[in-house]
Image 1 (cartoon, rainbow, N blue to C red):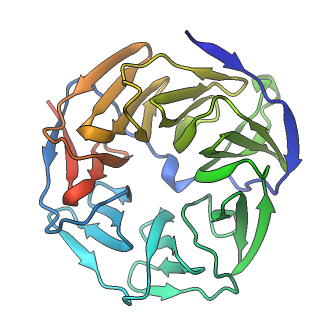
Image 2: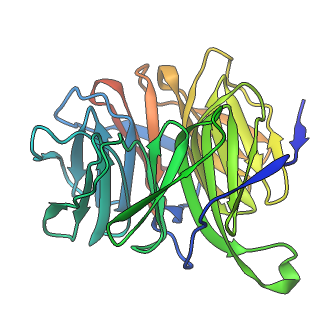
Length: 316
């Protein structure tokens, strides 16, 4: 059964700023997508993947970053004490990495440099629009804004554990007003939080753990997690979607490609493509757990998981 859910209450939070977001580029989804295994030269357990093009992709796992240059994967050498959790950027020359003990790294297209902060928190996710509008998960139930090297924490409901971030600037309702509104969607253990121009509302949809968020606009967003939970946000309300995943599956990642269309990756190598109301299981040729998915603007998709698993899409 599908359900519509509205917000209950609001808390304060600084919202996102300027139009344009690097990790909102999508590709064109296809029911005929085939997945081929890539040689990652490692047995690292990957948990996320991100890039700026199909020839510039990063996979993150066990504190390490691996890079794909269009022909091969290689490990990026970092000091052994650095443990990376997540990446975000808005160009190949502007990439941020965050990790344990307050670690923030910046890549200018040539070299990686550490940005010193006073924090010793373990940063597990990052999302933003540009250098003046970056957000970092900096605690169990808090999100920090990061601007010019300064971190400012914003605490959510104490029962809400932050797991994933996604942001965008988009036109608000009613569309006839043509007003650009700033949004930050936060997925976590215990619900979903939504920031709308300096206000954040938290809504416990179900006793779910929401692990990933992605959309093409604020009127076309998917939030996924455990147990086998897929939630769709149309800009007004949340809708729990019936899906073919068994409750034993933990949906780990989502990449939205069009209106109510997206790829989903899960445990046991499961990949599904949703085209509006039509769910299609795709052959990943692996039983390794998959944890992250990302798509380039040319439609090429990458999925990563356990035992060095990296899959690349091929559309026939």
